[in-house]
Image (cartoon, rainbow, N blue to C red; front, side):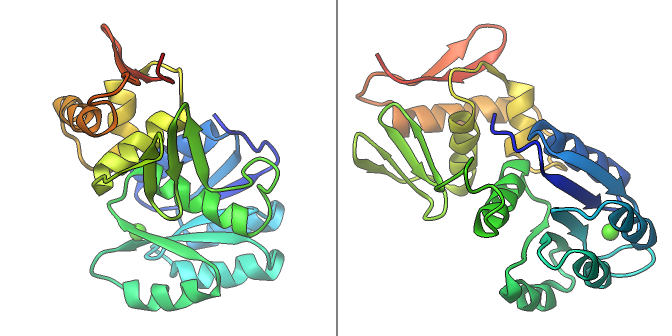
Length: 233
Ligand code: CA
């Protein structure tokens, strides 16, 4: 996995389970993560150690994520911010704010989508410049342009649905690594999905049809574990 060990992340989320999942996922990126369940403790944490990026729930028990942001900006004007919004809440207002370079995802979201947004923010801020020069993933003759959301194999375009795209992105970020169905479920399906691993088998079969059909296969089953993506041949 990519790793930018210098990156300090702050997770501000009052839903405890979600806060814990976010913390774990961001630590797996190799980032140093602090978490806070409300605005006041987030501001204290940021004063002690200004973060490079923050994941901010908009609706916190004591204030809004936008108010927290003002404090973060005072400590570090360059902080990258990703808001978490509820579908029916202040999405429009947040969308207005994101014109300033911040971004947001609407709950529930898949962790791969959230990570892609965070990497995009860091890239645009020049923080992850050396590690992630372009938004491109390449495995063998399979190429993904994450920003344009385009995929080709041997130069042939492949049309994917949103879920297929997130699944392939996770596989392509972890090439030659056996991934369990549970791992895939955790990262590609939204955190509140709570469903069973059969949906992973189903979507792998869709991906195989689009990526591997009529070609040397790249997606392989690892018995008793899950799946692995590797260059053909
Ligand atoms: Ca909340």
